[in-house]
Every structure is written in C-alpha cells, then in structure tokens.
Image (cartoon, one colour):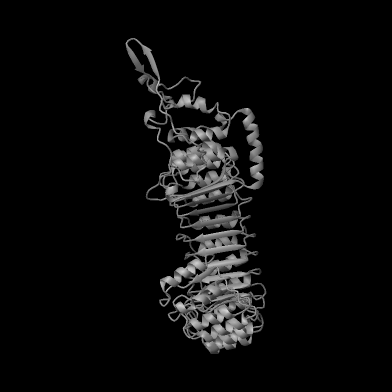
Length: 640
C-alpha cells in the first residue's frame, strides 16, 4: 500500500505528483457559498454493507476500498473520460482535492474534439451577448472559490471578467487560485486585482500563458507583482486597451517599455504611486505607442520635465490627460509640454498639486492645445490672475473651467475669464479660492457671457454682494448655480443678481448662506419655482415653514429638497404633504430639532414618491417612529 501512495505515474499520464502530500487526508467535503458555480448532485444515505469471504475455520472481512486512494494521475485519466462538463462539475463537488485537481487541469486536456467544436459555437454566442463576470470581495476571495468558478464557468464559454478585492492584511488568494482561473478560463478579457499581498508573479504569468484575449488589466496594491509578470502579460496579450497600475512597488520602467512595444491597441494608461517608474518608462511608453493611446494619467511619480516634454511631443492621439502630485516637474516642463505641438487633439486636462504650474506654463498650454474644452486646476499655488487671463485669451473652445484652492486667483482673474471666454464657456467652478475679495469698484462691462449655464462659487469667503450683482450682468443665462458657503452675501446681493437673470433656474444650492431669509427664498421660488428641480437650503437657519409653504405651491418639478438645520417644524412638512403637484424623490430634514413624531403620517404621504429620506439628528423623532417609516417606506433609503 505504501508503494501505491508513492506512485508517480508513467509518462503517458498527467505529469507531476499529487497536489496533496497525503491523499488520505484530502477528502474533506466542501462548504462553499451558494453563489459558487459548482454542481452538487443529490446524495443518498449510505447503506452499511460488508463483504465477507469464507475459508478455513472462520469468516474474514474485506477492507472497504475508497477511490481516494488513487493518485492524482489516475483521477486525471478518469476525469478526462467523463462524458461532459456536467459530470465534471459533479465530480468537482465531491471534495476539495477533486475540485482543486479539476481546476488545475487545462480544458484542452479535458475536452474531446467534438466537445471543442461545440464549445467554440458557445463562445461565439456568449461573445455576441456579453461575457460572464464574477466579483469577489473580502473573505469571499479565496483560492477555493476561484477554483469553483473556473470549473463552473468552463461550460458557458469561460469567465470573461474577474474582479478580486482582497484584504491587504490577510489575503486568502494566492497564485494557486489565479492558476486555476488560467487553466479553465482562456477567454478572460478583464482582470482586476486589488489589495492582494499574496499574489505574485507566478499567478499572473499563468494568466499570460493562456488569456490572450485580455483587454483590461487593473493592479492596485499588489506589492509582490513585479516587472517580470507585467512584461509577460504585455508580450502575450496584444489586445490590451486599458491598463491601470497603482501602488505596486516592484513595477517600474521595464513594464512600461514592454507595454509600449507589445500593446499596439492600448488606449488608456494610468500609473499611480509606483516609485520605480521614472522618465525612462514614460518616454518608452509614449514614444513607442503614439497611434491610438488617448488617455494618460500620471500621479505621484518620480518623473521630471522630460516626461511632460515627451507627452507634449508624442501625445498626438491623447484627448484626456491627468497630471497629479508630480513634485519634480517645474515651470519648464509645462512650458515645453504646451509648445511641443503634439497635443492638438487634447480636449480635457486635469492638473492637481503641481507647483510647476505657473503663469507662463498655463499660457503655453492654452496656445498649444487649440481643441481644449475642459481644464481643471487644483492646488496650483503659483498660478495668478495674469496667467489665467492670458490662458483665456489663447484658448477658443473652452467649455468647462474648474479652479480649486488656487489662492492667487482674485476677482480680477475670475471676471477676466468670464469676459474672454464668453462665447464658449458653459460651466465655471471656483472652490476654496481665498484670494477672492469683494469688489471696491465696478468693472466696465462691454458684453455678457451668454453661453454660461452652470456657475459654482463655493466657500470663497471674500465673495460678497457686489461680486454677485456683477455676476447677474455678466451671466444672465444661468440655469444651475451653487453659492454654498458664501457667508458674505445677503438679501441685497441676491436681489441685485435676480434682477438681471433672464433664464429659468433648474438647480440652486445656497447651503451655508446664513443670511438668507424666507422673504428672499420665497421670491426666488415664486419667480423660478415652475422650473426648479433641486433646491439646497442646508444650514440656512433663518428659513422657516413659510418657505416650505411657498415650495408646496410653486414647485411642481422639484425632486430634490434639502432643508437640513433649518428652522422648520411639523407644520411645514404637513404643507409639503398636502401639495397636489409636488413629487419629491429626495428629502432631507437632518438636524431639524422641531421635527417630531407628529409628522409621521405626512412623511409616509411624501414617501409615496421618495427614494431617499434623511432624518438624522432629528432628536424629537423616536426610534419607534423610525421603525414604522422603515416598514412603510420599504422602497426608500432612510438615514436615521
């Protein structure tokens, strides 16, 4: 018997020894989640039986013989002679040993020629309708689950998309699990691995051997994966179009060089927080792949001005670029990028936390990117009014501009942008810009910005009534406005702004504007309520039930209303509930201390159309009332 356990098989059997060191201990029955794709046949109660043979003076009992004594090589020969995938799935459900053995055998070794022809037809059908997708998170992500998925999806054309979100501290997925996927899922097109410290090069190399249809690769916080695996993927998967690599300490320039050389269809690349990636890798990637790549995102990398110069020269197909936290890039890099004449097709540019962005650099970008439509600048400390006005004069097609925490931008730069981009600009956002101050004198206005539809001026504490009045003259066609956190404006500024508004408001956010009153908001509602769809009054403590009554009578299209931390009571909610035309979908009364259990019936009435209700920090609403709301409004998400 010991010789039988040590048997390794002849050459015509499956090569290699048993995947379990002691087959007698491998018959543990599976306890898998209900969603795993493994077929479990019904089992009958075993009958007690014994075999006897007579001879001599007594009766001798034979030992029970189990199929588990067979080595993996013999089980392989049995599995490959089964009639189809249904029978193989049934065998995979017998024990962990059988499942792992089945998942680690290539489907080309299991399926006969007739079955292969049938499978090709199934692949075509699945490809026309989409592909199978599986997502594993946390404790559900294990090698055993991956093995079950590989066996269960093989007969349905194989797995097309696999997403694994592991636990970085305790990872239960190893190279063995990825190997199981590679053996049975050659049609894999999307692979996403996050927070998997136990996945290394071996598992990814197994994927590279067979998954030649791979189109998207996403690696995030996989510290054991190195250049070797990524190079193998790049060389074996020429159909790759989308690659994202984040926080992988062992992936560097060699990977980017291979991607640029062997992935001619690459359209999107994102590299973030990879310390081994430098200028050499970026140069190789962009200089070797200039035909179709249209999206580039570089964040927290040790690159210099050379990389930006390469983008400016070779990025002929680039339409979207994101540059974030590039500490070693100077003013020269952005100047050269704009003057490289290679970004003629750039339409969207986002720059964040790059101190190299200066007036000279942003002006160069405006001149070198004639088709730029969207620009977002965040935490650009050295950018001033001069640079932004020069940029606005140079660019002709700009539709959306976002400025956040650019503290050297003042009201002169703000209004200069509006005046110089008045024909094309549709959306302008100014957030947390402390350089904005109140106007001491009015600017001469020769024309208005009739194209601007959306305006955000948020948390700019120096923005006051005069600036708001001037906005009304410059931007008469506004439909969406966000003045959140502008504590310096009051009724006078709003009335001056409203006098020049020629369009109909659709969305209005005045959260944190503590000086707004019922009289002002009611006048806005009476004038624009018939088109208003969203109104945010969060933190406007002077707003009372009178405002809710006005909303109930004048806002038939309103779907999103936030009156959190306002001075409203149960009576105001009752007014909303009695409105015949109102059909709110999202309603928030968080922090309203005067809203109590008495409004239960009215909230249930409003709940006929609600999908979201926020009653957090409403201390006068009891737990029993909350339970009734949850029971009655079962279609609505309730925050309590």
